[in-house]
Image 1 (cartoon, rainbow, N blue to C red):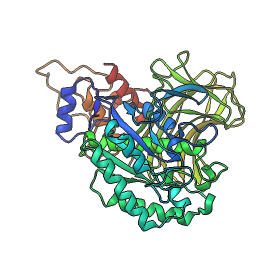
Image 2: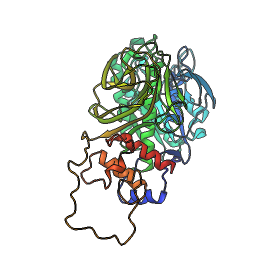
Image 3: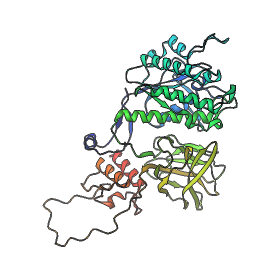
Image 4: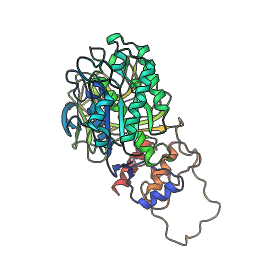
Amino acid sequence: MKRIKAILTASAMTLTALVSAGWYAPPLETVAADQVNIMPIGDSITFGYGPGMDGGYRKFLDQALKSKGIEFDMVGPEGSNSATFNYNGQTVEYDNNHAGYSGFTIKQQYPIPSWGENGLLEKLQSKDAVKNAQPDIVLLIIGTNDMTANRDLTACEQDLHTLVDYILENMPEGGMVFMGSIPDFTAYGGNATRVKNYNAVVQKVAESYDDNVQFADVHSCLGGMAHMQSDNLHPDATGYELMGKYWAEVIEEYLDTQSDPDAPENPEILHSDFENGISGWKSRGTATVDTTTSEHAEGAAAASVSSRGADWAGIAYSLSSRRCPEGTHLSISARIKQNSGSPVHFKMTMQYDDGGTAVYDTFAEADAETGEWITLSCPDYVMKSGSSPLLYFETDGDKCDFFLDEVLVMKTDGTVPTEPETEPTEPETEPTEPETQPVLKVAGDVTGDGVLDARDVVALQRWLLADPEIRLADYQAADLYPDGVIDIFDLGIMKRMLFEK
C-alpha cells in the first residue's frame, strides 16, 4: 500500500509517545505520504451513461476524495487525466481515467452479439489494463447487463471469480478489490428480486476471498428507483453523486485501517472551518454557497450563504450512513451570523431518505441578533432511520444571507459531560512555599503541566466522551470560547491553536 495518512502535531515525538502508550489523538490535519492509484472498472454505470452524465459517479468521487485530503490518481486505459463539470455552481476539474465499458457483461457471451464483443474480462485482457495501471484499489461494479440478459446466477458467479482472479493476478501485491453491488433497475424485465439475488452472488464471491477482496454495498446508498434516470437502467445525477460519496467513504475507511489497523476509531466525523474552501458542503435549494474572508468566527474565513429563494434553502453536508448509522450518538455544534438588521430564527436540521421520501428532523434552533455570532449546538443527537443523512442549516420564515463557521460533529456514547458539582475544598493546613516557580496558566492546558500539546487534545476529547478515568486538571483552561460551557466547540479551538503553534 503506497499511501499512509500522517498526523501533523506540534510535536511528532510527543504524539508518538502518546499513541505508544495507548492514547489516541484525533488528526489535526491529514496529508498524503504518497498517492493511491484507484481504478474504476465496470460497465456503463462506471462509464457514466446518459445526457449530462459524463463521468458518472467518478467525478463526484474525485471531489469527495479531494475534500477529505486524500491524494490519489484515477487510473485506467480510458478517459483523460483532466475533465471538467459543473459542481455546486462552479466549474471543477476531475481525473477522468477509468475502465468502464457501456453494454459489457462480466465475460464475453457467445454467440457474439451484433454490436460486437462485450466481455469486460476480455477487454481488460486485450488492453493489459490492470497490469499497465497498477492500481492500489479497484472499484468493480459489473453485472447489470448480465441481468438484463437474464443470465443464470451460477454462471455469473463463475464469471465473477474468473474476472476477480485476473484482476488480483495483475495488480500490485497488497492491493484491494472492492466488489460493488448493482443499483435497482426495471428496464428489460429487471426487478428488485432479480437485483437482490444477483447482489447476494456478488457478496458471496467477495467473501470467498481473503481480506484483499471486500464487498461494498453500493446499492444501499441509493433510494431504489427514485435515483434512476428515465431509462430505468442508469443512475441519475443525484444517484451518481450518492455513489461517488459512498465510494469515498469506503476508500477513506480502508486507508485509515491500512495506516494503523489497531487504532481506535476517530470520533470526529466532521470539522469544517472553511479555511481551505467549501470542502464537501453544497447549496440546498436556490442558495449560493461560497467562502468569504470578510466574516469569520475563528480563523480567517467562513462559509457565506446568499441568494436564498426560500427559508429552507441554505447550506448542506452529506454525512456517511456507514459511519453514522441509525442509533449513532453525535455531538453537533456550529457558529452562525447574519447581518439583516433584524433578529432571525435559525434551525439545524437532518434530512433522511426514507424509500424515496424525504424526512426532516430539526434538532437545534436559536434566535440570532443581527451582527452577532451565535452557537447552534446539540450535545446528544441520535441518528434516525433512513439513508443519505443530510445536515443542513435553514431559517424560519426569513430568506436573509448568513455565514457559517466552525461546524464540528463528533461521535459520543450518549453521555453529556458536566463540570464537577462542587468546587475543590480548601486545604486544612496552610500552604507551604513551593520549592520551584509555579507553572504559568496556559490557555487550553487542561492537564495542568504548563504547556499546550497533544496530551491536552486527547484529555479534553476523552472527557467530552465521558471517559470515567479522565478528570481535567484545569476546567477554566478548557473554556476557550468563554461562555461558561465546555463542549466540542472548545475542542475545535484547541486543535486550531495547537496546529497553528
